[in-house]
Length: 220
Image 1 (cartoon, helix red, strand yellow):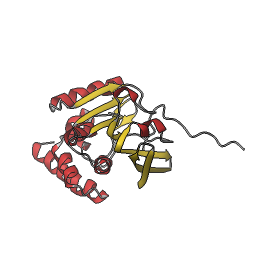
Image 2 (cartoon, helix red, strand yellow):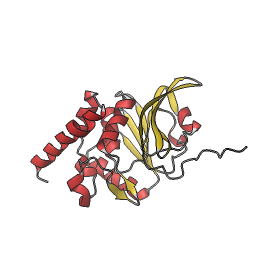
Image 3 (cartoon, rainbow, N blue to C red):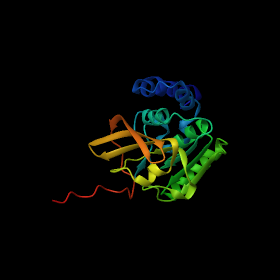
Image 4 (cartoon, one colour):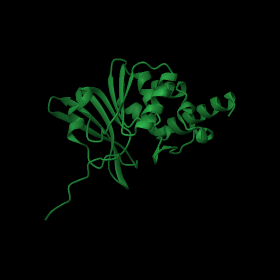
């Protein structure tokens, strides 16, 4: 792609995919327009960097489509002082968007190669408020304390209680919960020391996080 074609494709991504999927927060649209998605896509898929597809990145993993990135960012309603946990770094594009909108981001991925590649890409954008970790966070990530927002980039058959407890009071958690074909995007908010509210945002289907807990089988 030429620079002109890239900018046109980026504009089309925002106006034809992200905005029509009810992403109307101008801060989110501006951040997605300013973050170079093409730098986070493997070279062989660069020509579809802005397409409405899940792009393969490594070991069977894929990038979220842009419209899903937009909905996650909008749902979390990030503030410049927020401390954010991202579970599933992937290619690092959503990580970069989170870093532009929040004060600090801790991003965890179970795949060391993906994490290392994402770190290089993020460093290339001089984003100094991101810490990338390698580990299994499918059932929570206690190592880095509490957060104001948590973004889970793969589906969870059930939402672990440990994740909810990692939110500060007032904190928000975005997760896609359930099993295909009946998955729901949820926004969970911690409203008190032992109280949470949950809002169903939309229905979708995402690949399940590796090692995510499964529902207990029903026993008569």
